[in-house]
Image 1 (cartoon, rainbow, N blue to C red):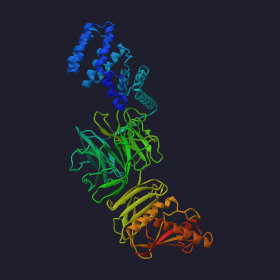
Image 2 (image 1 turned 90 degrees about the horizontal axis):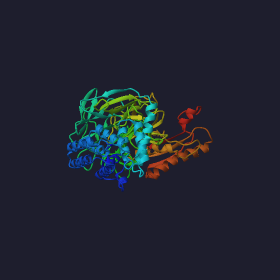
Image 3 (image 1 turned 90 degrees about the vertical axis):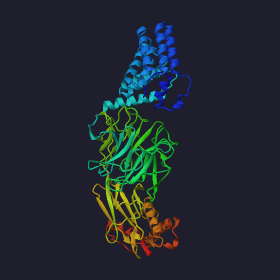
Image 4 (image 1 turned 60 degrees about the vertical axis):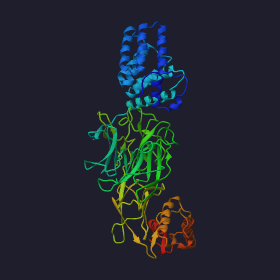
Length: 636
């Protein structure tokens, strides 16, 4: 709460926003001393001695916790000297202790009307904070400016300037923004908030508050299901992978100093595995909470107060290194993100495209307290305030966008009880619709096969958009894909030739892509479609490395396999040139594998030039097919 009088209240006010260490300075007067000085100052102006006596009795009663007795004494003092400003300041402090904000503010206003308080200008700062909390931005800005003019020591200058900036932003937003209509999405008997949807919209998780306790619920087909966890403790802020089969959330189990982040796997449509703590380095002795997981579960954003950040709470990022068979996971050392400020950043939400992040912050211009902002991680954009449909002078949390990219969900207590609402996003905030497909892996008999590894790579950006291993491999692999990108699909299973092909993502991508694996056999060939060279050049392009890493993993998974690496060209150019170019290209692949510790006894390389075309060379499409790098199984 922002408000009150004297040193005690002023420090309480600024501690909401600023590090306490900034205020360890001389000159902030203890509240009782301040009131004495005010009283003595007015006594020199011939304050009624009887009123002064009542005031001293009131101050003593307040110190002893006898608030009603203190108010009684103050009323008697007012009847003797209604223009005695110190009476109203003490009265304001009493009402603050009682939680009566309206009377507290009224008393401060009365004191200011009676005395300019030039020697104690932080009362204007207090009053500005009250106006700001009420959304009365014009008045708040006026009081902040009064404070800056009157406080020669500028004790809260930084915070006052920050709040003036927020007032300017809010006033401009209110003038220029047409607020879209919102609709009630979910309400319950108890407050509900923090929604999380899978990409298909089949599963909704949310947090429900019952007194001091928080718990999560799942909604499927309009039916509510409690989570079946045996562990006890407050938990919430769920985040789902795109397929809805893995959930990350915060839980306070009584260990250490705060919340940790946990993972749970879906067992059936309505049941979940027991939570597994992510452990160090994601979880520390600090507060680590509010996870946002990527579509495939390999990127984690979360809020933390750990050391090494820029403020009280920052957004951190970590990558999944491996999954263990017992459900545990190993994550990289988290990194603090570029947009963190000395204030608080928290409550992240990562959209299905893996590049659009929403977060709550009070470190950027906004409507007050924590607003919701949008950032584009690919270009490291400045956080964009998403507008007054969601943001207000209060704290906003629990924001998300569904797979359409056009509907935002958030919680609000605008009806008197916290419910979940949704609204149609403005164009400046909307995201591209999530494009997704399922991959079904089949064996040589056409039956479903569980691979050891599945990867989907955005070739141009060298970015893995989906990654699964044998410790977590659903039968149908759902992957969110960026639109209009060339993707490299890699599937690996021990004893089978690995699958490698490119896929052009678009709005009409097949809902299910079937992939058939072939057992490893002698003389089998595989075109490495993810190997790229410039025209008439043998040097590997950077886009080739995802394919090379897959080939390396295949050889490690099948240690008895020996291969020939073959280079091929089209019929343009002379024969000798083509033989040399194709052999140089094959050697580059050979060299990569050798440098990554594949023994040379397991590899051969050869250039065939134009001798083995796959298609006629009379079209550009045919020539493109003939320019290729292959592997052939020599021995298995």
